[in-house]
Image (cartoon, rainbow, N blue to C red; front, side, top):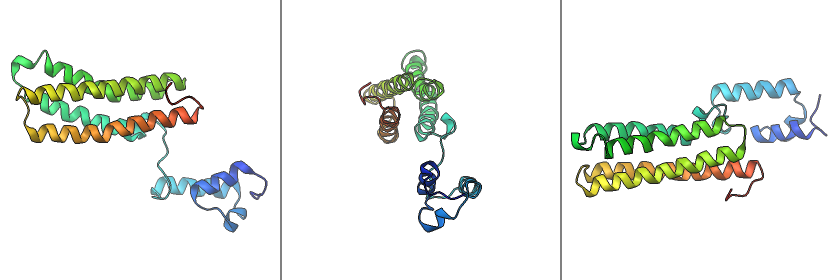
Length: 174
């Protein structure tokens, strides 16, 4: 009936921004309707729920990285097709793949481990891009775009790792 004494529903009201006197007059059904409406309308005050790995900003940015790398590697000389190009593609693809696999695991430690692998793949890709730049295989503008993409992705991966650890009471270094 009312939220007084019901910590779960009161907390839910606080999270969706309807705390206060109006919250005490809402029923659970009303709250679910407000929640559904916020999710459908895309209320900017309420963060987007994470239902699948596709909802993660880190995964989406990882996918942008894959597409950018595939575009770049198409332009590399044929002599690099089986070495540098293949390595860059594998490293790039590993980033969103590990985010997705980790998200689907039932163990938070396994999820964190997959996020660490994604971070390692990100570093591997950055190194391969640097090699391509130093060899003159990619221009400075392309290298700068990839660096900017990496600078967006890395903090997302670190933040996701910290969030999973904190949510499950694990050490940030686990």
